[in-house]
Image (cartoon, rainbow, N blue to C red):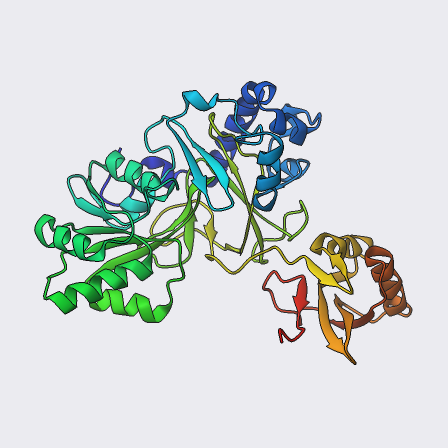
Length: 412
């Protein structure tokens, strides 16, 4: 039930109770879905479902990454064997750039956007202007479903046709805006140029950077704007609240932060790849690697919501880099770290010297034990089949930015 402060009681439940309920639901979902979901069955690879009781146990399951979806869908169209639902039984069959094909199920607020819209100030009988695309891609439908779940009326504006959109805003006077922050600025600039008074008071923005300068400009226009982190596969994964401190993870999702290129979760506070398990019967994504970097913020939100908080988007995790004509993957560097428990963070720096690619592995260690540098150089050569040098550095000296491979070669 919607309250003044929160969308429902689930947002303020005790974290241990939420965790237990999520994993109980996960086991039940997998038990019913894996027989009719070939890719899910292969991903589980004989793992006993009753062993999946917490996040540590979940790390038995390999990550399926978004970067693999194109090839997986080509092998097994249209949805790579990741949904047990026949295409004709779905509500919509959508297409994202790639092309990657996305299913939409028939449940209310199937994408989970209502919570984010509520946190951004949208309420029943508000009129909202939805400027996400309705053409093939999920964005417009994703946000409209959440607005309807709140009881809002929706102007299905989509993208483009700025003049017509401004004319509609002048007459229909929507109080809410949903779309990219860039297009909101375009609309506001056009309204200023034409003498149209903006009726926007609340906004939920996503899909593009929202720098502080633009945040201030939109706030100066009298609009209280909040950010959401969403993908075509997961719907709304996390959203900003009145606390203005990170993004709260959406209910019904299990979110992990893993070391790029691996299946291993990092410690809270460390930057890594956002990996999400979506508990959807129509599209039961298990450990889906988004390719986006973020980190977990400590403690609950000041707004009263008790779910995990993310720092927001911090870059891309795919750092696979070609060196001397051969690819080096973050997983290879992570494997070196596993062989040497004394090490902290690792970073492979690729640069150019004398018109040649060179590799320098920077390795955090508590002490420069005799022979460690030579052992690491041998491990680097064994892992990459190329020679490189090693620099042992102090613990905590490498940035906490999730970067495992830093390509510092000049672009021209």
